[in-house]
Amino acid sequence: MDGTPVADDGQRAASITLDGIGKRYPDGTEAVRDLSLHVEAGELVVLIGPSGCGKSTVLRMVNRLIEPTSGRILLGDSDVTRGDPVRLRRQIGYVIQNVGLFPHQTVATNVATVPRLLGWSSDRTRRRVGELLELVGLEPAQFGRRYPHELSGGQRQRVGVARALAADPVVLLMDEPFSAVDPIVRTRLQEEFLRLQAEVRKTIVLVTHDLDEAVRLGDRIAVLSEGGRLEQYDPPAALLGAPATPFVREFVGADRGIRRLVVTPITREVLEPLPATGVAELPAVPLGGSAYDALAVLLTAAGGHAVVTDDGRPVGLLRRERILALAEQQPT
Ligand SMILES: Nc1ncnc2c1ncn2[C@@H]1O[C@H](COP(=O)(O)OP(=O)(O)OP(=O)(O)O)[C@@H](O)[C@H]1O
Image (cartoon, rainbow, N blue to C red):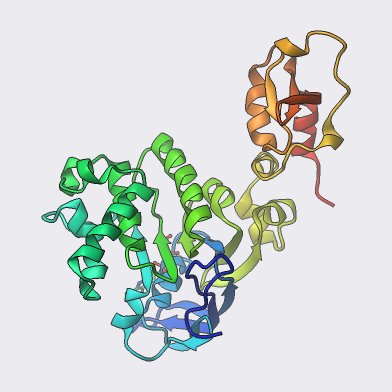
């Protein structure tokens, strides 16, 4: 494997290996101490933990906006801890909370930032900008000529993602990318973002304060405590179902049962036989859909039950109590 491995489907994405990295700031603050973490190519990993635990420091060490004081960082097999940080940053997309678009440049010029730095021809750059704006759901003819202040917060955020993806980076770093917008827009952006990631399959490290966001987006979640100490590194269901330390147990909180429903699919085991009549009048939820979404339907369903369908065909009855029992169930 070379320094920029290619994922199976031909997309460019590199694994990230943090090998015992640490950061001691000049004033002596040890923000991160000996952290090791591996992110597979094409995987979306969320860093979460209390304020000041070192999340942003870890993220910025990956693109060397902050220089580690110990340890190594590998992209694929290449050690990127030394070498030119500016060149490194051109291979890494970076999205921050308030997007950081250049206010006096149009959307198209903003998105073209890295391709221009890389010396792409104007034709190739223009095509790429159009392609990316479409990818993030902004009509290029309409939005390309606007300035950032002529966009909504959600649209600005999409432009930030398009800009970060412009030069087809092998890694995308995102620091609280969705926290500057209201909760409704945030949920929509998260959903769009998951669709986008299914298409581009980048290696993504995302920092958030929001556990719901971590559960919704992460293939794996890394919970950090002070000093960048890795408390647990697991897929969302495992993290919520089996917190590895008292710190994680407290951090994920008492309502982790409900959160776990987000990543618990409706399976045939929780179904009862269909009633002989009245199935057509019941609300329907899909087999394999999340138990959390099913609960939202069941909370308002008359009688507290719904029909579960597989490819539109009714396969069983689901009761509200069954979902609540799933939420209360202690993991084994
Ligand atoms: N330039 C700096 N000089 C000294 N200490 C710093 C510097 N930058 C950050 N720190 C300290 O390093 C620790 C980790 O900071 P960092 O911003 O990485 O945490 P965080 O988990 O991202 O926090 P938050 O969730 O509040 O954004 C904190 O104690 C912070 O005060």
